[in-house]
Length: 408
Image (cartoon, rainbow, N blue to C red; front, top):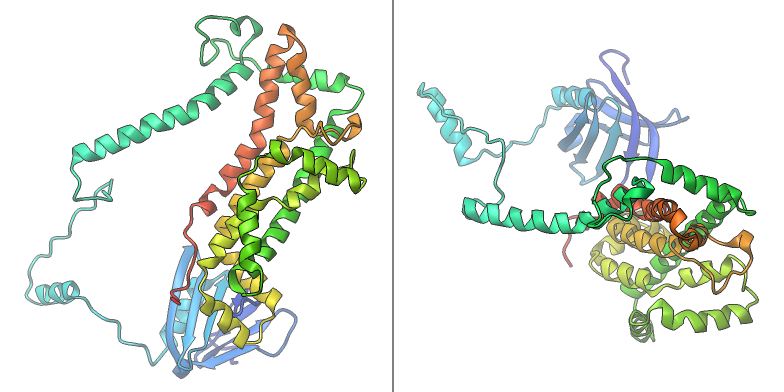
């Protein structure tokens, strides 16, 4: 390409089969080329007469995403540091631009401007109503009901945090105050002092819990996702029967399966080991059920198109299926973390050095009145991790699953 009037930007090229390449995009007056990192030859190159359409999604500053569709239906997506500059440069030299459709309103505005008439622009309201056909009284009623339920939902959490900040003399007031009049962090200090006095270090309990939670959640995600993909998108003898068994297992709580789990772990020689908690987490039925239901809504045409393009089964699963069911596996992670983090493991782990954090914190509850404040602080520590994980991932969980505009 010519060095005269050339625009260049580092970024990522994303292909329709899910492959990504790091490198830089370079455009001049004649065409565009993408060079992968460390290569001197472009893997994508075209001239402007080959272009059919170009779209841009601005993300702030000069960065952004550019989608280019050629006349042979080839599609390329670029995530660039200087996407706006490259877009403007290509738009300047793009000779064969498609005609943009005009609405009836656009045409009326054009004719009014030619006649010299003043065009009244509608005012933009600060608050846009989602349901303009509903009365203002109806809106107020709906928001009032939502506010009441929100208060009921958040009240236990606020009361628990307030208890952890109360001095000891405010715990026994009647009626109990929701928030302390003299907040203090002494309860958390006492908690760490008490944990530091135990013959097993506090860090050991924390490492045990983190190890069990991370390995159990990761294994549950991988095994449940792979099994759900096969059950949702492939037909084989016994598939429906197997899924019916999984659905039936959802009816049994952990208290019912505790004895069978203990017997199985005992036969395998895994009692008093971390695997006594990790292996049952791998086989939790809720994960596979949730993932299968989401994957069934994924268009089969996506998988068929990837297969025709030569993608492997694992490549389809990892690059196409998993990104499109992200709300499902994020929800599954929350359920798994909540179950493993709150497990006391007292029935299958006997060694004090292998006990999880929740077990150690629950021992404070048996310390009498003097440890009431430390017990309240321990409860806040126990619930903080599941709540934090939910807050960080709730925006993804509420997203609708992408279908790419394809219908079976």
